[in-house]
Length: 363
Image (cartoon, rainbow, N blue to C red; front, side):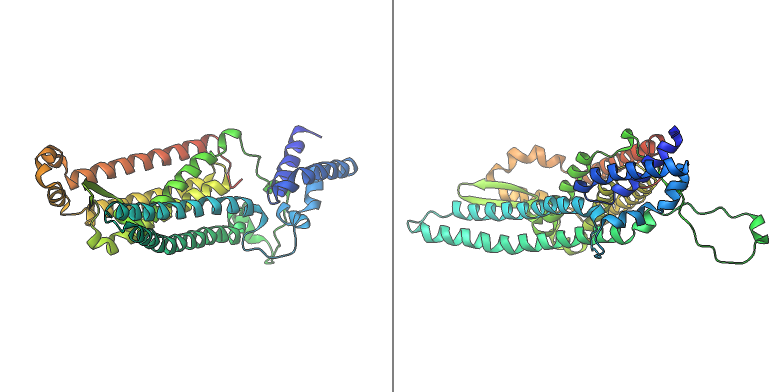
């Protein structure tokens, strides 16, 4: 078997086993290597052997159940792991905020009959946090399931075969329908190690996006300046909560687009044209939406400085120097510059690694 034929065999086996559960892959790999080697000994041509075996996507179905899946074996392990991470990220921030609110109420209780009041404060905190936590988890679960289900249904499009190039000579051919037959030429090469996307980087980005989104939706007051005077706790929100109903959808849409891009990177696992296009499109949309949020919408609390001075009371003079540095427009410009720089750096890195090391299509 020549090196080129060995490469075709490796490609075929890779395309078959990647559609199977991890526990099954090694066994199937060995079976296919033995099967292809035996058939090659008879036919003397790997291309003929692989053509006879047929499309690896169809061949892999021999090792799968006939059952129809919402999330099939190819994505299920990643999906299951991902759901666990997202549910934890969705629930924990809400519960933490609820406990913080409950303890802040407990700190203000000084009466001799404080026990009932403390129990009531804890109960109220849990009563407020648990429903929001459950709603957050259900929402996160639904979004993740929807994204993975779309990927499962669009699998054929993601693995689209190379189209036959049209030429003038084809005009002279008879008008007939020709069924596209799978051949080993459709096999993509096994990805280079340098083309593999770091799973850790994607996980960190996904965790940040989920936690930030949950806090923005269920606890926007968490982003506040906090002042304590004795047993009194005063918070001054950074965001303009009076206009939050207008700002939040654009904010969340931008984060959702980033989440879709990161999930795609995590599932595909290698730098390729699909990942590159997704990153360019999603990054461009995120820059536009960030500009809208930071430069068009009234995102910042217009009374932030005045509310801080009021909260400080007699100590306002000590914070006067800090307050002179607060400028909403400057903060917006700084954040927008940071977002644009990070996004363009990520797009540039993705383009470079795709063109330098990446596969021509999905792994």
